[in-house]
Image: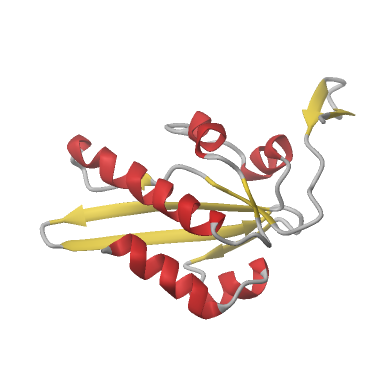
Length: 144
């Protein structure tokens, strides 16, 4: 159920309330490879991360269809978090060249307006309330 919030500009905006458990939206990862044919790889990585996070019943994960509405845009992540009703936003990029792949992610705590570039598995696990080994399993399974 959406709530309404009046902005400083006088506009009324819909706000989704935060769930009772840690909540996250994974925005589509940007393709930085320079090859438009690699777009499928960046999209697939985003989908695999969402699928991996959905395995944890202790998390509220926003569906792919909702987050892919932001593909190709540069939205304010705090606004996205408010619109989707989540506390955390994961955004990132994928760069593929030859046999090497570089994946960079940023976990953003919209409530604290904190941006953590290159956050590690330990920090992700702590913030989301899941085991570090689980984060590594997700990352390993999705990078194969």
